[in-house]
Length: 570
Image (cartoon, rainbow, N blue to C red; front, side):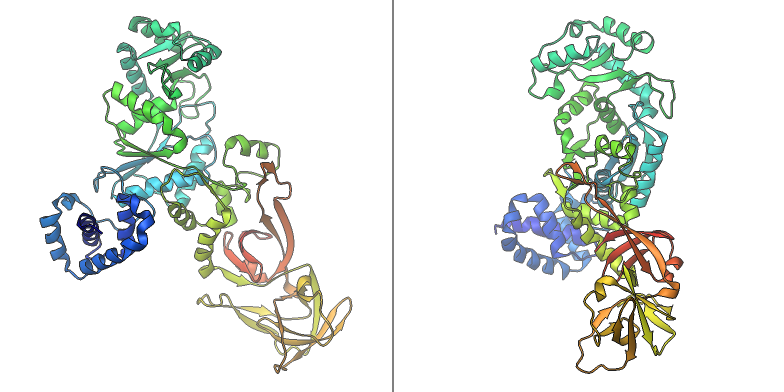
């Protein structure tokens, strides 16, 4: 390893140590080194010993001495104004980011319920603002009134609150519509935009053939007149404002794109006050600059629009944020597109946006997926443009680690068989609520017959012995319409079948919904929601709705209501 690289590693280690009370870790330094030197990703085994050695040296130095070394050898990092409280594993450093001066934003359009893709974008922005001690803006991109409804504003805010994301500023893009008009007039006056009255088909044909239309030859005065008519005379589709890009550009986005169009639909907030609305490309560029956004992120499908984003800001002489792209996040067989999901709801194939088969935040919450699992899963994917079509069990693995420690264990039986046991020594037993964590115990009454799962006794024979979990051992004496057994203390040289049970007298009947993959090979899976009738302990009724349960030998479930639970995962 050359000395320059060693020097950079030491600088990173020193900086991180000072930001964390004098101590750093090998993995944290490795993550930051790979962020700065991605070419080392294939040489981790070679680099790691040197990193470990440098980290050990740095950690052995008192923090005051660390600061002196930084001042003498790496003065450029003295600009750090605020301690980074938590390292964001999986996210590379931001270009030209200054501690305390980073501003990110999440700009959802209120045209549907938030899903896992929204969660990824929101979490990335949240994590970066925290990483640099900066600010995060929530901005509802509400410039297409035809598709927007107040319930979507509420749903998005509820989803973000559930994810634990806090914002320093919340606003609507439409708050600045008068300012957008002023900016458009600036472009028209500079002859950098024009009003186009061509038919839609003609515009598409010209863009495809890289031909400018006659409207592009208009002068500022003609465009000013056309702009005024858009507010009072023209009907929707009869006139648009277009940016003077480059009709011969290989980037089709730049072939005189739309900046404003007429929409007569009622806006959920502003009602019928406005009818001329900015395009996404125009509004997002202006808003990012106005809101002080330093680093803007969006999914990679918008990558070709970056050129237009910067062209608009240059034309208006406005400050330009850094733009970054990441891949969209979807799960296999669980599309996030509103175009696909809405017809499923309209046709009654799924109940609503909280249907546990869907990738919406409402559905994930109802299914028992935790916000912590979604955040950890998102960060595990890193900041990449590679397509992310993740198997759902990747998210489940994170969730399992989180819910296991506080999920009460309950017995549950399916397709029950009745067992009558003579000479039971107990009428009440105490069962632990968790096998290893201190979650207390519950008292279970044992009176009369016992229910067992058919699956557990399908090949049972007379004289077989069973161990009823938490109760004791029984020996089978007869097998007819009922199974009879006697309690036994025989523990010698017997291979007991260990099974769960439910007291029939107070058994609680429960329906468990088991969601399966929604689409298979792009076709709706008609069997994607399985319903299973089971019996469980009456203690289930004492749990709050939303409680996570592990039904023994079945899996984790979330209590949905008094008589229904939803299967989360194994």
